[in-house]
Amino acid sequence: MNLALWLARSAQRYGDRTAVGRGRQAWCSYAELARRAAQLAAWLHGQGVAPGDRVGLFLTNRPEYLVMLWGVWWAGAAAVPINAKLHPREAAWILQHSGARLAFVDAARQSELATCGVAIALHSELPALDAAVRMAAPVERSDTSGTTGRPKGVVLAARQLRLASLGYLSEVQSVVAGDVMLHPAPLSHGGGLYHLPYVLHAGVNVVPASGGFDPAEIVELAEHWRHASLFAAPTMVRRLVDHVAALGRRPRGLATITYGGGPMYLADIERALKVIGPHFAQIYGQGESPMTITVLPREVINDAAHARYRDRLASVGHAQPMLEVSIRGGDGAALPVGEAGEVCVRGDIVMQGYWQQPEATAAAIRDGWLYTGDVGRLDDEGFVTLLDRSKDLIISGGSNIYPREVEEVLLQHPAVAEASVIGRHDDEWGEVVVAYVVARTSVAAAELDAHCIEHIARFKRPKHYRFVDALPKNNYGKVLKTELREIESRERGDGD
Image 1 (tube, rainbow, N blue to C red):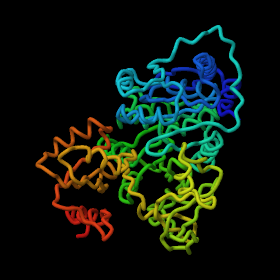
Image 2: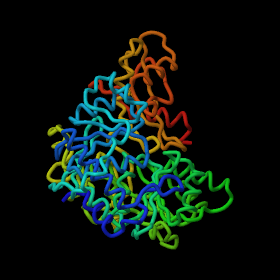
Image 3: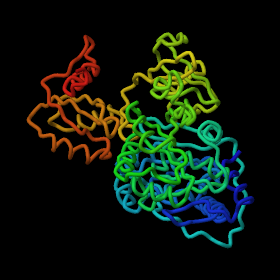
Image 4: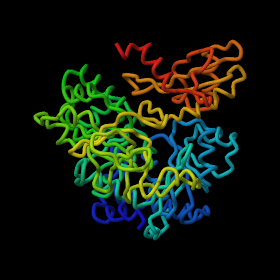
């Protein structure tokens, strides 16, 4: 089933209703959105894009993004959303690795991508659509969609996107025609999936005029549109809480703020509830099972009278209905309640695999279970508490940063002999990147910073550089990142 059928059906039933807003203004109706998507699909076919081909989206948030995305799906092609904050070299790698036929990109990045060797057609604007083209039905497809990212591209079928949408409607909140989803978080990320249930039920997807997250703008938009929800990484929640606290009154028009994408500390959610009110739900997921592993619903977060309230509030909730959750040991066996192990999930929502990486897929999905790399425990009521990540992934401001990627860039500098990158807790960003560097010759942090900016996205570069004589290693020469984390913890006074 082509996911674009959801848009076609909403256009039939709710054609005059607003589908997309920009800031305070209605941008297009459901009938208009479907017509533009169908015409773009016809244009894509004319460019040689066939069902199953990949089309890249390397764009900041804008209403046109949704036209492009639905046009790709309407054509039966697979979308490849790319983080707009990535360095052009990184985006070029993703486009080439995914085998994209063409890509829609921000105008400012078009020439940069071309200089990075991208040979496919790059379009910075919606093409001129032929109004005379008869609106055809979405191309029939067996569950096909897609997304990819570096270092591993996650392949998601339309089935996974449907289940993620139904999980939102079942576990986070219901949606009726006219309800609003604000999109300050990148549409290319998991939060962008939350526009789907609003299309299914004829809600309004609103892109802020700023194209990003501004706390004052969010408060104003919620008050303007009413019954407005949004997805926010914990760092965004903290900024919103600070703004509302300074404002001196609770925001009006808010429905639900769903938070996820990084650790939310107990003190932070308690303050958020006090300052903003009972508008929060939490989800836990990852690209391999997008937004869909566990949920901490509003009614649980607001049940302050429960005997285990704070324990629940510190958890990531219980399993969502479309999958199973199990805590497993190193031997793959399920562990008893209360014991810590790797969080594993199984169900139709789990990815099809990693794009063109069968070995990585086999390592991640074993005996039908996706091994998340996260360490947690289950209580006797089915609530999951995350303890740590066995992988070294750093989540800063809701964005994923792979330490090895940063280390490889640092090691390209002639003055760097060794480098090891870890994440350090940060009250604003959740985590920040810290690089431990063994230098061959004298080098300044500013020089390394400029080197990183030249090769990777700015948000991935280290915020702190620690120059050391040697890195701690085990007998096999592997760097002991646990010791580096302990050094950071002692310097911050976390153990005092």
